[in-house]
Length: 296
Ligand code: GRG
Image (cartoon, rainbow, N blue to C red):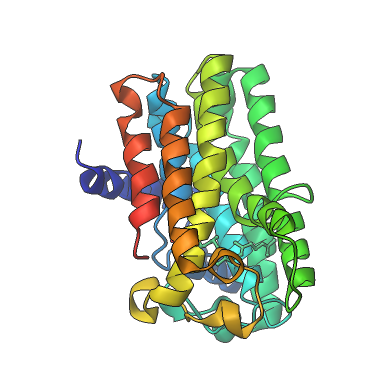
């Protein structure tokens, strides 16, 4: 299947499921749910849920095996963007082509909208149908994968280290640790969870996890490159901000040409990690190249 068609098809079913899991709410909860939905439906690429689905399919599973977890990844990712944009963090005014959450709802509600999305993600995963399908062992394993990737040993840690490194020249090994946690952990967990819930063998799960580690890194390098070479229009967020904030990035630490070479090498490593898979993993292979070449 053509990748563009695949991404569109999956984006639609993910959006439908998100809408079911987090419906429009009237009454006292209206404002908070509106704020959560404002960012959730602001036009994200849905790359984490799609990766989760594609990994399940690569090992013979289906989107039905993973949908609540796929959606949970998008909800956690959206919370992280809302909090990342806050004045206390990156203080951004534009995200997904729209004013950031705190610009519309104010800081207090934006913080709570992020908190709400993070917590609701775990409620969504506690789906009786998912637990029955997956079985207790796989379900427990996935919960641990998701919580570890999102929490204080994963994305939250990456964000804390990133904030502390601003304006300082850090070792490239430390920069890699930041990126593996801040951006990589959730992407890696998306594919690992998909492979677990799709009933992959331990060997398949390990190989997909390795693929996830590489694409997580590739995603960050391409993000760094786009911050310099991309356009605000296409990205839906301000560009050129990494240099302004003294962020340590691949282009700033290695030079643009080297960063591009590394991106190609890491993409090749990702594809190599799943070389033992049959054609059911072709979408994962194509997504690795899509991440390398993406313009938004
Ligand atoms: C606040 C705990 C906490 C963590 C924030 C996500 C994040 C961690 C920071 C965002 C900074 C950033 C730009 C990281 C680069 C990679 C990244 C996560 C880009 C945005 O993800 P996309 O491109 O966005 O998947 P869409 O809008 O398409 O979902």
